[in-house]
Image: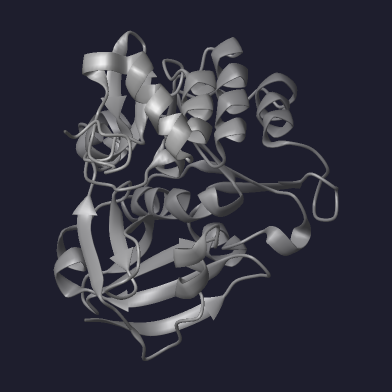
Length: 296
């Protein structure tokens, strides 16, 4: 059992939990994820690691309930425990694994949308701890949905907040801020890391491609099983087929076929849709979900 040391409601729809998981805390890196399971009947839920404390042996997760299992998860309180808490899974951010001298000399921009602020934070924090400042854009629909503002201020070189309705700081989309920083303020970036809803990442990538800024995205939003078994997170990167949970979750955003990934994500939610995907993808279809027969 994995005890919840702290359970907190960040706003009306987003929750945070600090979980006692010393072995995961000892080995995890920014960009990786865990799989949580509330009880024996609960589903496996992949969640990106928001923070970790190696000395305390804790891992912090942030989530937005979107289904029955995460609805049950939000009811857990401090002192309760997860049946399973597995990780670290996936590949660490390339900022952690690449040559440090190369990373140190890069001008980096992070773009976080909504709950995507959670997986952005540990990367910015890691850079800050290693003496590297990065600019960060945080976008949300309204002021009430902005999360981790104070935490991000503490580690970001410059923090830019924007809200769709203009209820906090400025009105506009994250793409408006990207354009403003580069075109109006004359900032130059060697790399952008964009994490958030699929549609946000798609348009962030269209914007950075036009500005000639290499961009990394996290495809965590399309993961289901998290181990490469179900095939839900299959996507096309350039001319290659990849799976977000085992090959990612981070990829070159300019090579991701977002339209295909979003359509596939919707189809995968129904039994009929999974059967259609099996028919279309033939021998390359990845089984394991137990519903479409692709694992037979």
